[in-house]
Length: 150
Image (cartoon, rainbow, N blue to C red):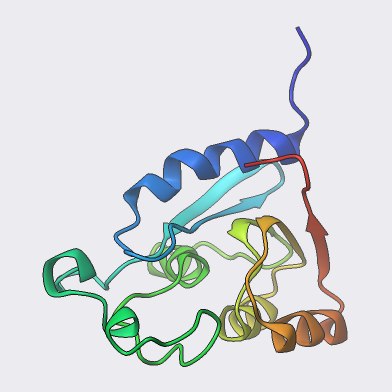
């Protein structure tokens, strides 16, 4: 029996995490790891105590807003943001960690990842946001796309 690599192991976990997503358009999961230990998880959906899109409808779908634009017109919070916030709430530093994500980050999440001190991103699916990739490159964040996962 061949053991999965650490990247494979953590990417596989994203499949379970994303099942908690309440987004009607795309299920996204994030997992922050430091020294091969899980620090936090996150999935996309409405903030705590706020009605989910499944209950009130998707504003972005209603207005035909294309993926990758007008992030402010969504009641949900992104998986990466939720994972970083969860770490902050519990007083756990994400500095020098790796974040595993089902999709490449949007520009808003990229800026949060940079300022949080996360040093590496591993993702499987693409998200349409060219500015994100440019900022991550400029910041020196290592970005690895896993072609054989998810």
